Length: 299
Image (cartoon, rainbow, N blue to C red; front, side, top):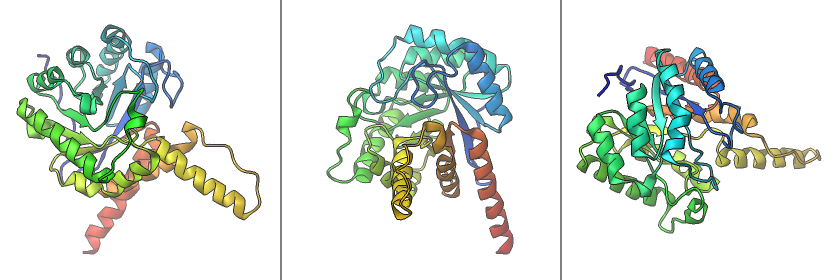
């Protein structure tokens, strides 16, 4: 196995990491394929590093609701040249994939972390791959596929209760497969088989997920939950002042609110936030850390 620099680990004295999203896809909901070509993807990765990203998360298959699956070979054709190129920049790289063969190829090309959004469809082969490679492995909660997950956002016993239970069952499978506890990172899977309101329930219960004893990744950037909250606030403001009703926010117009989510999650001590606008998230977390420093000095 190729040796790589170790991925960043949140310690008691380090800040929340910022994971910049690099979609090497033609159909991402957030950027519409802006970084699909290798040249554009590599340039965007370099720009995110310059903006302060700690990790670059490279994905070659869209996981938005309704997206069509592609083959592992097509996925690898998209991302491996990009991973090899940005590895030379010294970046810590995660590969966003549900395919074990892609995970193996990506780690061989210079990636350090596997970010798997399979959720309840998690395969034994992926667990065996992560255990064999001995790299950090992000285990996310999800139900169904990109075409069925919206129909599965039903949690009669409570969103937080059922997501915690299902994520813990996935965790036990991962540990039983030989993944070291210190390599296991959990993600509640905002937007994956969750409505907008259910995302907020999970964010409000972030400490319950922290209590599971593993590093925690929160990926709330530009999600439907953010769009819905902003739309409701915009509508209320327009109604109060008899203004024209505003158009729904574009993905880019959700970045300030996404940075607020990042700041609140940093305040809660999560390991990392996965974001589109790296600079905004880094700045927000810097302010959180500055306030935290002065709080400690005042004690």
